[in-house]
Image 1: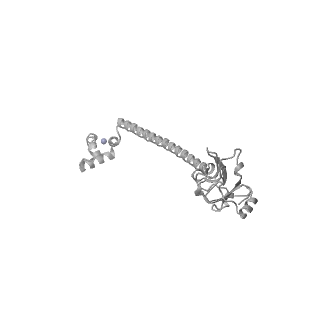
Image 2: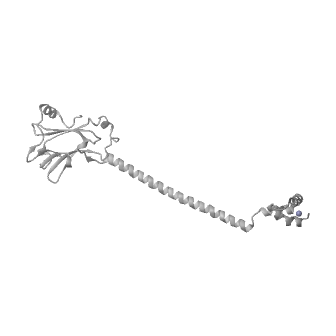
Length: 233
Ligand SMILES: [Zn+2]
């Protein structure tokens, strides 16, 4: 078979649709003809224009993937930053509320409360604390001339930030004690002196009616006369 006939048959041969006889004849010819082999090889190569278009498409796809990746990366970065900020703020708020803030304890925080008045006129307050506390006493005044003695605790009743000294005492045993003369409590003589704030206020003394707490027993008198605020309980 000469080249012209083979080249006419090549498209059919290439697509595998020629007869077995033609196939055998073409293959025999191809073994000895470089020109026809090249022509067959060219049939598999994409057309130049198509190849260029394909390359353009590939570049566009790569660019699209890169764009998408950059978008996801930016979003992940933003999300991560927001999460870290929220965690930091939350952690700070938690730490601050547990260690740096204080609110007055209410009656639910006391295991017991004992009060008495000594012969000297001093009022004694003995409080057992059953929850995490600052064991920090202070007083505040109300608008009707009342003075309220209170003990502070963190807003969250947690004891995880207490120092080693505070941890030595089991909380149901921790006690706070106070001894004071209501008449010279501050520069201005108060109208009333209470223990606690708000609904939990317990009247200890009033200018009008005097002492509202029981007189100390002999044992209490001895104990409190011997006691000073520096004592460790
Ligand atoms: Zn040939």
